[in-house]
Image (cartoon, rainbow, N blue to C red; front, side):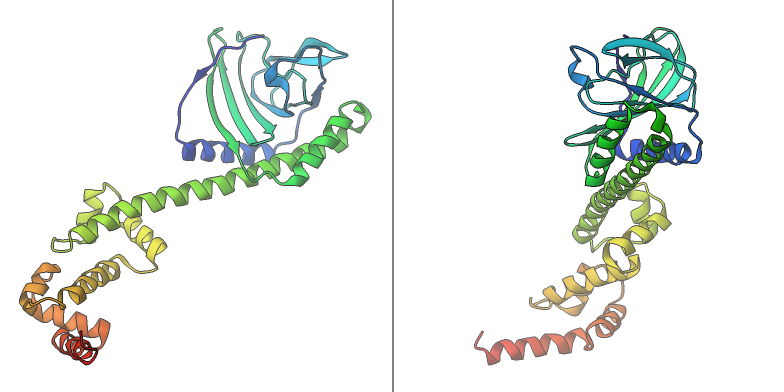
Length: 298
């Protein structure tokens, strides 16, 4: 059995998108057959977990278990193979051009793999996502039922229904992982942007300049800001500038100096924005703070 691997490394997010699309396509199709691979003697370590293999393209010879022995069977595109624990499910040769998609149900989570064989006896191209968590407990009950049905071929219709439900569950797990990954990516991007803004409040911080600096679309920047803060980009920058101004009012600085330090070209505009935000002009705000401190003996 062919065992060489040539792995293409994609980002986690891109693989999740690929697999989500594949599963949506598979779930729209009618399966052209469901085959079972049964346990064989002296199983290899990579045969321990139950696996679902979908033939996307080509008609490869797949090694499967029959009555304790391995045999090679040609399986057409659109057909499925379910390998019970300790049963083989790999290609017997890399000389056939084909593509397969596999779900491996392992104790630590779902492993999703896509193999593309070019038919030149060379190692396949592989994309995968490993150990996706969140597989519902009912999935293991369904797998146990499939393991039993594998020995009862007359119930193949029931098995096909269970297989389709497992693919649907896999799609749900992948989409949840995709949302989590995208959220983490968004959070990391916004952290860099917000840190830069806070460190450079004196500079120009227009939406266009920030989008250009971080090489992102202006609309995406606005969307990201609202998603992370609930505010528009303009509101976020304004609030950061005014928050800094409030701290600077504790020091013996003129309003002109504070205005400039917070990125305002005109002190009058700074005063108007401060009053709109806090209800008092900055000079009055400073006097009130001083009186409060004096009253507490500070």
